[in-house]
Image (cartoon, rainbow over all chains, first blue to last red; front, top):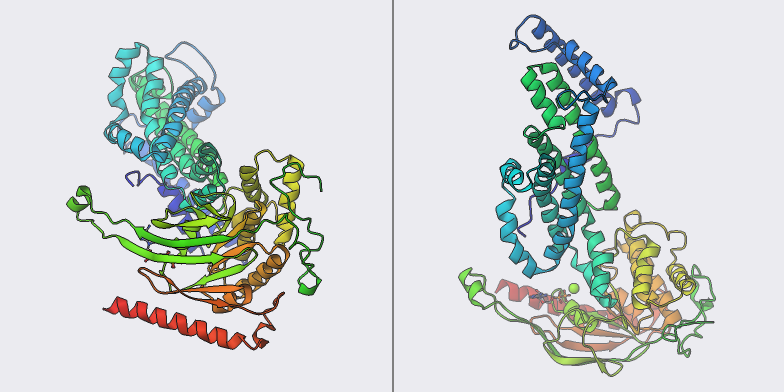
Length: 289
Length: 312
Ligand SMILES: Nc1ncnc2c1ncn2[C@@H]1O[C@H](COP(=O)(O)OP(=O)(O)O)[C@@H](O)[C@H]1O
Ligand SMILES: [Mg+2]
């Protein structure tokens, strides 16, 4: 199949890690793997923040780099005052976050609404697969930002352009993963369906789609990750949102706020990904995805 | 019984399914018309897997020759008989069964089910798969429900629920209805596979090495279960197996196939043991050992020929 290489590396490596795990946790609850890992995490974090604080205070870093304490102070301030509105160049980070999330939600939902049904059709029909594959292969590697001027020219509107960029860049992983999942449904399931005399439609909805669901969801998860990557980049050139927030702070040359935004973008991305990871697990039913 | 669908009627199972003492099982169902049991005729059936000789294959140097898996097989299977097919690996047993199931095209010849030529797959034939082929996202109950709903879309919900319940009970899985396949052992999964195949009340049951993926103990236990269930229903069964003991325990007739390519039926053995049968006492029958020896010889000879052909 041409639709390979889209499986999620994260899940695979996690699964293999779990297999290697030595189960001595029952004997010493205070020294099991998780506790040790948490300890190492906290230790390294303290080390990092300490080194950062020291380096900034000793002026070892580039001029204008803030200290760790200053950055944390800003983070605290922005997260305790998320919703204020003094015009587009002084907007609470909560509003900016919601703006970015709304763009992602709209573009990503539209992309999924196109990609999943189209992926199913392409996966089922070898003719559709061959016919659409050239488009997919050609457009998939195009950088999302390459679409930006085109979007601005067509829509003459930054909001619509943002949505368009998300749509065009998050459509591919879902499309290819769905098609791959559908095309590789175990032939045994299809044999069951055939011997029962199930209609084509019933087979698609009751067998093929549920069987391909783990692939579809992992495609949706990758697409979500890409949307979140792309929106920040796209917003630097648009008017509002987290990306614009960073751009604006860059113009102000106020680095602590940039670091705050980076942290929040990472945190939100992490939460979104965890939601999809849980969803992936939910539809697996003991299968390895 | 008040049954809405005249197509679907089955006897009520009055006895407990966990009852393993065979003499307690009444055979009253035989003359009830409610358990359909088909007559199957295989007439001069040949299967040729078409090779690839087109230009594209030639360019990519991936041509292959036509392969005749089985050649000119003729076989009659009477209603209410349990028939096993045994033969060396790769001789074409699955190919034959898939043609009966309608999953694979017949190259030449014809197969008749109750005098009707088989044109494709259909629910008059119930299939039990070697690797169970249960839907992982469906519970035990849902797997069976999917089958029955597909075959009888207009069945009233109450009847549907009753049939599902009866068949789960029949294979001894009461209590596991809500479990998903990954929570079940291999033996339990195949019980679901059997219940699913029986729940649609087919004319004939097709089983392709149904116990092949199970460990020896589970296999023995499931064989006994199939024996018990078969005594109740006496539905026509065709089962592929690799196990001589299994064939002798369950079958009325054993079809022995020659090695492939162009495999044929070598011999058909009648198994005269009285029913109900019991694995502990079956080898006390005077014919048991001679039948077993004959089958061993046949399998040994054919397998040896396969190996010899591979060396050459
Ligand atoms: N789709 C196929 N295309 C070509 N050859 C096949 C195909 N399916 C099976 N064969 C060949 O037909 C022969 C019989 O296969 P099969 O029926 O699976 O054997 P068995 O079930 O007796 O072990 C084998 O030699 C196998 O390689
Ligand atoms: Mg086989």
